[in-house]
Image (cartoon, rainbow, N blue to C red; front, side):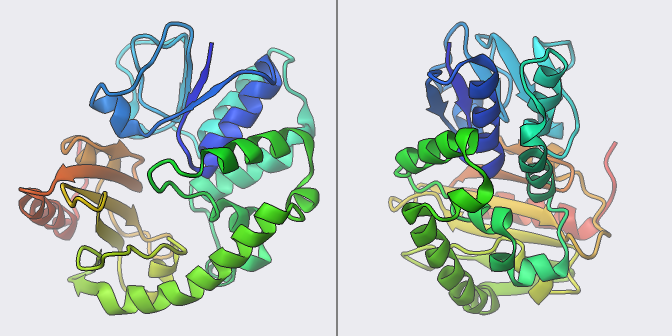
Length: 299
């Protein structure tokens, strides 16, 4: 039995809760949703999937992405919910395998994963410990697996104030604060407004900047949705698209997860992503932009 999840804040908290409920020695297999969708993932009988699409080999499955909603009942729980971690927490609390000591962690995960944030939180995430910590979780060709595992271990044992004193966490939080300052420049330089859609295209950059993913909604206040475009790797064979409804201007009616499922991706009603072949990526990006500009609710 393994925990199978993705390397974002929700996935890390999912792994924390599953280890707490089922055993601290459970190994974690870190993958991206596209690994399941493309059948590259090595999912084995007995694996517990969290925050990922369903796989036929899964023993249990916990997810909350609208694009992954099953047509038939699966073992585990699927809900349209703020986070997958919240689903797991309720599932195992009902079975008396988790207590209330994770209430704050799960509440913060719900807030962060659903982007239920204030302008103050977006402008100064360094003033909000969980939010800042979530920004230290990045996936650059799975180089950070030891860090993700370290966070899972600490969340299972320590309170947030103690975690924030961990030397590696201190270093990464400091880096995030500096990255966020620089990221504003990159957003302002590489973003174009196409009607009411902010389109940030980093394909011309060799080193793709990272930073506060919510900042675009503050900088481009008139936008109803954002599109971020970048190459998946240095070989430039794949293009990654990330799309989100503005968290401050909720006028976008497009079901992002359902739309991107048509392009091999998925996500929530208000946010999602997909990976495209670079050879015809621009054609598909143009199609996606046309859908967003039309801003029509889908069935």
